[in-house]
Image (cartoon, rainbow, N blue to C red; front, side, top):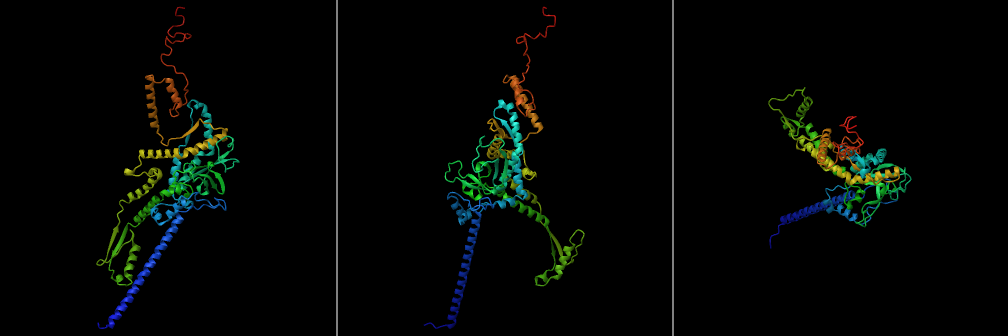
Length: 515
């Protein structure tokens, strides 16, 4: 048998007790970490659930006791559950859910977000529209009706209504225009017919911010139907209104699965630009702080008293004295042997470029040139060029045709029914070009057209009367006030072969010619 060693036995027992204690502490720490992770996941799931949820409507939008449907099918539920899950949260980490109309309205108070809305809305409506006739042969006969329709558009403020709708679309993702007919039942469809819109029944148009409306019903069953995921009726502060009476403009539509979460609005320009604006604000403030503190002063002195735990009163007194006297009118005093003052200056070169580039990044999301958005023309290679402005105008023109032509066409037809009791199918309109030529450019264009007409006439392609008619019909020719149907006397028209027998011969004097 081995000899029994009491000391070693006690030591082993003590080591075992200590090891068990350490293991218990480690287990307790693991449990605490596990509970913390679970709470974090629950909190994240709760936050995601709050983010990806049906929008909170303003009081009174939906009648009391009515619960708006998130969707009339089972598509959106699993979608939101996935986005609220851990996997969906990782996937949608950089996806911004609907921030709510309150937050979007708060963003509208900042000048950066207002610049997006004001620039786009004013450019969309700056040159207005031109009401014309499809039948060119009846252009002069239609001139009176066209003038009346233009005056009616000014009376009802059509372009102002369109501009406000464009602002709402930028701020909230949706612009809506109500067609107000006197004594009409707004819950039934609006049919463009004299029997439903009588003469003098139009009271006007009004803009409705999307926070006051919510879909009442929409088709979620047949994807081939034209009204699939398009609300057929809306709640407007507790009153049900048919969609045909609300001209809805959404220039940045969302996929169908996200439409219910956004209250069937599109995504607003403010929400798209928010990361860029926040980067710009942070960069601007950082540059300002750096400029304010670009120079720092260090006093080289004996710090032994402070580092050894002393009060360091002498050192702090000298620092306070220097701070109080630090100006161009003060004088600094230091010990010649043991002290020195050093200034460390942060270089400021390149800050202007970083700040301007951060500001120009806001232009990329909206595709608005910097000179249009900020009023400041960038320097260097990023300077706004004529091609850049033309490209911006092309984008505006495409938006006009894609999203604003149909609402404007409906408004003009409603005005015609209310004014004349009938819709003239020969009347149409077009958006005026945003690109305006200078007086010199217009003169060069007219000169080129004159040379072109001269060549055509000389080669007997057209008749001079046809060129005159073209001048009369062209409002930009400078000669649109002439009579295009006036017969033109051409050289040689009254030669001997085609002379009028009733006219006297200009070459024969009176009393001659065999009389």
